[in-house]
Every structure is written in structure tokens, then in C-alpha cells.
Image (cartoon, rainbow, N blue to C red; front, side, top):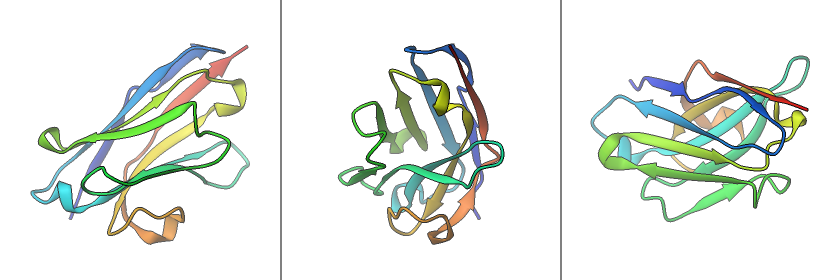
Length: 122
């Protein structure tokens, strides 16, 4: 049983930056791979980034690599998503997820947060 709570979303102008945080409960956080996904209205949920339990392995969607960075602080039971050079098309609800391995498919994760809204204006 893992509970995940995202924070850090909000309204930002195009070209700006946001850092999302995902705080996790549990005593074995470092054993979980973590992922970030996003979903815009009327669109499918989309993989954003993933990180292994130790933080040594990361994956990114090609279109986001170079702008977004995933990281984690296991001492704080928290995973982060640093988002730079934001574009209006980045507008979505961003959710974090925990699973056994850092995969890109949502069904490979076991626990999900409720999401945080990111809105990028022109």
C-alpha cells in the first residue's frame, strides 16, 4: 500500500518553468521505480518520464527529453519533475506512479497519485 500526493502544479507562461513533487508514503520507497504521466482533456494518458529505485536509470519521452528532468530524493520519499521551456501543449494533469520497474506503460505501475494541474499560457 503506497499513497502518492503530487504538488507544484499551477499556471505558468510559455517558456517558464515548474517543478512538480510527488510525496510517497511507505517504508520501502527506494525499492519502487517512479514514473510521471500526463493527460490532457480528450487525450490519452501519456508517459513523461521514469526513474529507477536508486535513481541510476531514467527514461524520457523523446519530445520531452532535454526540457524535463526526473529525479528523486529517497531520504524524503519524494520524486520530482523539473519542467523547463514549457509550451502550451504541455498543459495537462500530471500524475506520478509507483511500480516495480521504470517502464513507460501505465499498466506496469501499481500505485497512482490524484494528479496536479499544469496550465501553460501563451
